Length: 377
Image (cartoon, rainbow, N blue to C red; front, top):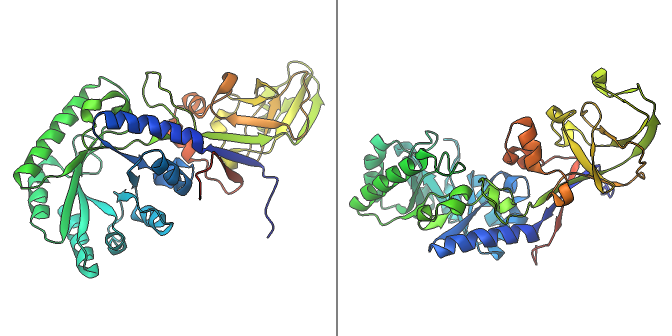
């Protein structure tokens, strides 16, 4: 099969912007004496885990974080020797390769501790674990009533090295929310119990939002995720540069008369004679159908509204009296220069978060291209 040199659409990943963002976050962490764990789960939030991980390490990350062990193992297999941490797998997952490949894993229960001990015994190597305390997110993590027993069991297990304790904040993107301090207090209590059990673990609690707003919660490691990709999780202005730009091009133009309707359901009708431009992307390529009639694109140096419903494979742009050339670039979202659309604008329009927009851009028909390459990638 020959390569497709004319993709329907592409996402450009600006690794220079990513290095800028990670450098800013790592500097915030370093000012508090903390190391930086770059979160590259979900294929680097849709940006590509391996090139993102390499760029992050180049910019100052000394840890990399993934959700699944498989994600971490893929990075290790690609040659990354950086400290790796993985925190959530099914009970059926084989943890032995993680122990063998020196990957830190999370433990939230006695059952998980038993599984990692058994894996360590199989490979004849001590497992590195981070004990997770549930401080109020009520998702993963050990509940407070079982914490002392889990800590005691882990501390007495010769096949386990307790590297750290950790937790995750529920409302750090709302500075001043009372739950933040409440979770910090519970985390302090959990740390005291670990110390009483003879452990001297590292601590990590701060996500992107807390990295930017709560230096008192940086502790030993911060874990920036969304901010690394240039999307700001807090209300205050930050010097973050969006890393992903989603582009396509015009494949057809046509003139229609006033009164003509466009796309399924005829939800849009031309109020005047106008020029329509056809763009070969739709909801199969990452454009939410819920943006129908509610989004603009950047075409020919200005914002232009789409006409009618987003289809599976295409959408139509109302260009008024302008007639763009076939092949003209269409920016669906990007860094927002000159008022162009952004992923955050899409998210705000349809009532979701920009995390969902960018992670949803890993699509078979959308080519991923990198600029600002990491040397040796």
